[in-house]
Image (cartoon, rainbow, N blue to C red; front, side, top):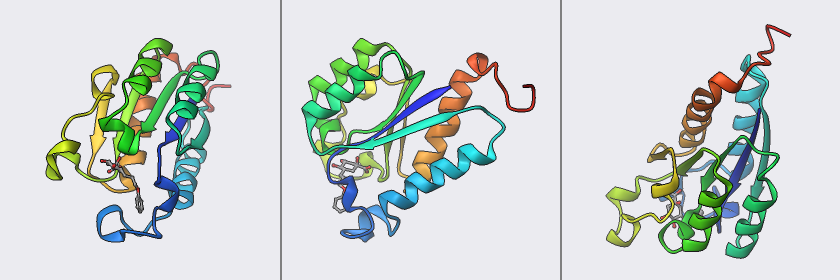
Amino acid sequence: MNILVLHGPNLHLLGKRQPEIYGHQTLNDINTALDQFVASSSFDVTLKILQSNHEGELVSIIGEHIDWADGILINPAAYTHTSVAIRDALSTVGLPVIEIHLSNIYAREEFRHHSYVSGVAAGVISGFGAYSYILALEAMIHILGPKLTNHKDIV
Ligand code: CA2
């Protein structure tokens, strides 16, 4: 089972700036935690994790993985609140999508309360810091569960 993990703009700065909002963990820490979760699970899951600061690049990446990915985890970061293009790309590939936020976007400025992505997502996880990513991965494995025929214990 292949899961694409996409980090949007400025998330490469995690742990280095604004730790009071986004925590002390770096993007590398989050990616390592995701890889470790998969390694310790009994599911045969392959992650591909990418970050981009560019809207068009995120759109291209989503489209390029239409045949590879079974599901997409995405923190669209600021593009959450602005990007019809990313919403359309996610909608077009027709895969289950889980939208992730480190912070609780509903407890922040009003402009963060609207997401263009939520309407095409299976669900949204917001407000649990780096743990939002693990919760989202668990939720995606739950969604894809019936397709996870190659359980490591079985083969
Ligand atoms: O809470 C989230 O995960 C957000 O997607 C983060 C975005 C923000 O625009 C969304 O409203 C909510 C911002 C990502 C920027 O990340 C930084 C990390 C460290 C230092 C500065 C920015």
